[in-house]
Structure formats: structure tokens, C-alpha cells
Length: 109
Image 1 (cartoon, helix red, strand yellow):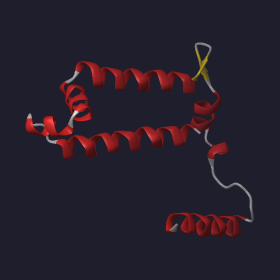
Image 2 (image 1 turned 120 degrees about the vertical axis):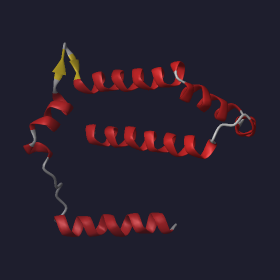
Image 3 (image 1 turned 90 degrees about the vertical axis):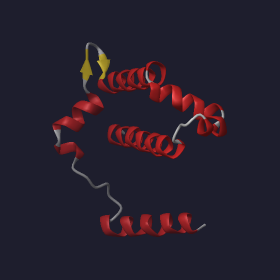
């Protein structure tokens, strides 16, 4: 409830400060316009970024020790811990990776 109340308060403050208009510098930056509307080889840039991100995650999970350890943690974290895998290190790294990908998605949107 506190989170929703904080969201409502900050959203109201943002509306008050901006007079209800969208703010930002995105329309003045050619890189953001290219990311949002550009095309490479007939496909939108966002599709290329999706393909590159999905390929990188696939390679990470399928062909590295990190991926094998992540699958072990997902299958049975107790057995992974007993096998000598530092679960906390991997969980923090995965959350950081998820945050980075979410930030990329936010920039693209």
C-alpha cells in the first residue's frame, strides 16, 4: 500500500510540475529516433536488438559454466549449494542482468 501511495504522490507531483505535458529530450536526439524508428536491412532496429539480446542470453545459458550453474540453481538450489555453487553470487548477477535488460527495454520504449 505504501508503494502505491508513493506512486500516486510522485505521479501527482510530476503532473503538477509539468503542467500535464510530457517532458524529455528524446525528440531532439537522433540516436533515440534511430532506435525507435530506424531500420537495418528492412527490419526495425528494435528487432535487431531483440535478436542480439536473445542470442547473447542463449549463448550464456547453453555454452558456459555460468548457464549450467544457473540451471542447477533453478532445478534445486539446495543441491546446487551442496555441489559448491555460490548461490548468492549468481542470484545477484542474474538480478543485475535482468535490470540491465529492463533498462534497455525502457530506453527503447
